[in-house]
Length: 163
Image (cartoon, rainbow, N blue to C red):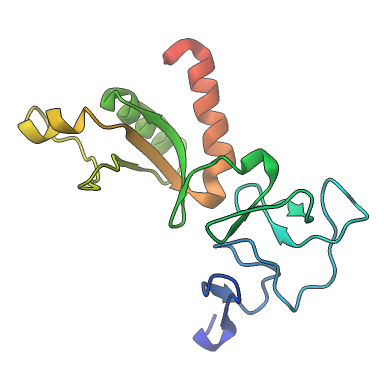
């Protein structure tokens, strides 16, 4: 696709393909989209798309947080840039295990501990830094479009008694 085929979202200024009906970064329905209706209220016009589950939402169902649209089911999902938090733990070993489970299932995964240094955790071994990092929550993020399936995988892992 050539660069001129992209446009800017009027809500978040993110890049959107010319043929897209909504912004994948914030969920804003583009002005070119035809009237679409809410997934839960079929007679109500949709104002946005939940960035997590991609369901159409009307004013009654939609929640906007930090410029992004969510359905009520996913309003509590923490989003950083274009990544969604799927797991967190004070135990870096649990986070690394979840990361490896999600990696092996084909998800794109980043593990971080968002403390003052916002360092990406890539192991670290037994050093002063790694022991200090253990005092912060290790957070496992996946790209927003992968969240629903990754969260399901994490839930199945937890339900099996692994955490």
